[in-house]
Image (cartoon, rainbow, N blue to C red):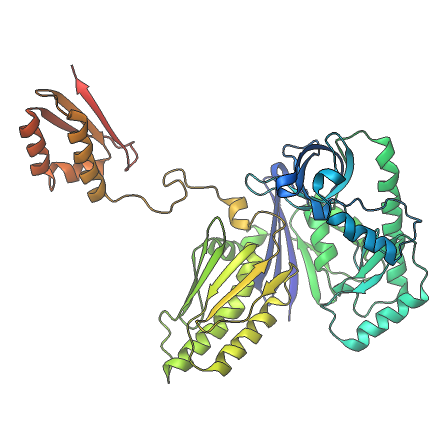
Length: 498
C-alpha cells in the first residue's frame, strides 16, 4: 500500500491529508483563528462549583471557561519523585466518590489539561489526570505502570516490549503507555522518548509556581507536528509540503523526532494546488455531502442531529445477479468499510446509529459485524460498538475531542435556521390568507397591503385568488398583494393603509 502525507498552507489555513493508494483516508484542518486547545495544560482558577451535576467551571484565561467533572477533578500528584502504591489508588477512588464541593472550592487554583475542545456552546472539557505524548510513548504523571497499546495485538511483540521495560529504569511518579508506532522499536528509541517527556514534564512542573492563574503552562504541538508525530510510520512513502517555511519547520521537526531515520520529504511547486494535483479537493467536497455513493451502486446517507448521527444504508442502483439476500449482504459489507472511513474523514463523534439493510441469514449478520469492527480498528479515536441487532441496527460511540469537520467548515443555514426545510409556497399562501383574515378581524372597509415572497405572491394572485376575494367581500376591504424578492419565503408582512 502506497502511503503519503500531504501538507498544505493556503490563506492562513493548514490542511494535512493522509492518502493510501491515492485515496483520502484522513483529513486534518487548522486555522489561525480556531486553533485547538486539546492537550494544553493550564493553571486555572475554579470559577463555579455545581454540586447538582457534579462539576465545576474553571477560568483558563481563554474565551470559554473549562468544564471539570468530579471524576476528573481528583488532583494528580505533582511530585515527580513520588511513589504510588495500591493504597494511593484506593484513596483516589474514594476521592472520586465525594461531592464536587468537597474537592473543589471557588477561587481555588488547579492544574488541568484539556481533553476535549470547546464544541458549540460547551466549553473545553478538563481533567487533572495528565497525558503527554511523544512518538513512541505517552507519559502519565501520577501513574506507576507501563502499558502497551491494544492495537499492538501480536503477543510476542507485546511480551518483547514488556521485557525491555522490565530492564529499563523508569522515573518514579510517572507511568507510560507504549504507542502503536512503537512496534518493532527498541530500548534506544524508548529511552530517547522517556528523557524528552521527563524533561518536558519537569519544565511544566517548574512553571506552576512561577505563573499566575489563569494561564497556559504547556501548549501541545501544532497540527502539522501532531500529525507527523502520530501518523508517520515505516509504511509512509513520502511527505509532500507546498510551502517553503512549512517545509523548513517539518525538516527541523523530523530531525528532532526521527533522528537517523530516512524520511522522503518533497517540496511541491506545481501550478495546480497540491490538493488539486492529488484529487483531494474533490474528495473533500464529497465529504460534506449527505449521500455517499458506493462503487456497487448503493449509497449511504449521513445525517447529523443535535443528539446523534444517523447513517442509513441503501442498495440504490445495485440489484445484484442472484438473490436479494446476496445483494443486501454485498451492499452492507461495502458500506461497512466506507462508513468507517467516513467517520474518520468527517471526524464524527458522540452517539452513532447505523441502519444496515436487514438480512435474514444470521451468518451474514455475524460476518458484517466482524467486518465493521475490523474496518473501525485503525481509528485512533476510541470507539465502542454494540452487536448488530435483529433489525440490522448498529449502535456505537466514537470519541469526540473537537468539533466535527463539517461543523468546523460550515455554519447553520441562516435561511432555514438549521432545519434543512422551509414551508412550500402553497403552505405559505394558505397561511397568508389566514393571517389576512385574522388581521382584519371585525374591522370593515380597510385597505390592506400584504408583502410576501415572489413564489407566495404568484400563488396568491393565481390559485388562491378566489380565497383573497372572499376575504375582501366578507370584510368589505381591499387587499393588495406585493411581491418582495428579498423576503424570506416563510415571512408575511401585513400593513394597513390609512
